[in-house]
Amino acid sequence: MKILMVSWEYPPVIIGGLGRHVYQLATALAADGHEVVVLSRRPSGTDPSTHPTTDEVHEGVRVIAAAEDPHEFDFGRDLMAWTLAMGHAMIRAGLALHAKGWQPDVVHAHDWLVAHSAIALAEYFDVPMVSTVHATEAGRHSGWVSGHISRQVHAVESWFVRDSDSLITCSASMSEEISELFGPGLAEITVIRNGIDSSHWQFARRRVHTGPAELLFFGRLEYEKGVHEAIAALPRIRRSHPGTTLTIAGEGTQQEWLVEVARKHKVLKAVRFVGRVDHDELLALLHRADAAVLPSHYEPFGIVALEAAAAGTPWSRQPRAGSARR
Image 1: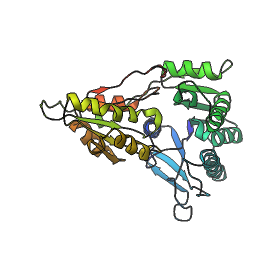
Image 2: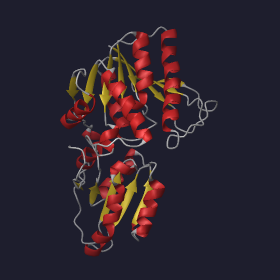
Image 3: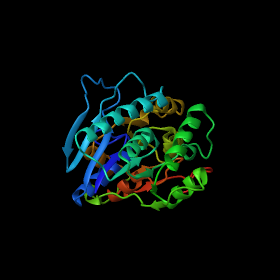
Image 4: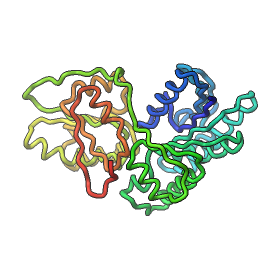
């Protein structure tokens, strides 16, 4: 088949688990003999004159990364404007495929941020659209959609899901969630659970020691990931386990706030923000940590838990009242 996959993140632009999911799926489909084109984007904050749209083949996958044009919108401050601008750029890049004589058999869209581009291209090429729903705005806010931006996101999600010819979710609870939020009358939903290639995550036996414990969080620094809960719990942990430290690996809109949370709880010196790390650096952090801490408020199917387990790192999460079912 000729598959046009539309995703707002794809290597080297990786924000979270979605980008890794799409990468593994695209390369696996290409290895099985399908012709896969991934339509993604250039990094945020780039100028289209210095970072123009690219069209390259990587690991058997043709990757088209649309330039951020115009580039003055900020994801955190201008979410909907940024999303619409990205969608417009991706549509232009997708239409160029037709000009070069390429026609997909199916469009596979990943999450609401690419709704405009995926729906427009599926209609233009007159092919079915399969959509993978990785999370919902209501789920991120424990079932509530109260703010202006949240209502806009929810509206786009509803349109995206209802316009899809087939739907995929990463867990049974996620299937139930979108049925309750956007049904009845949705297309057939197929549950395909997340997975990882464990050969990329070298297993290390845990060392036994009596010194200070090293805890690790890795993922996006967003409110729903609950990093602030881990920081707030650190003073009590350190009282019973003196010297315990927390390493936080990842990027996100909440980093400055999380620094203030650590300062408020008087554990700033015990919390280390290392930013985004590559695969080898993350594996080294996992092998060094005594435990991975995954305090998400909402996690339809956390890939980080699979990665920690594959690396041999014990992990723990604290179920919270009002959180989504796993």
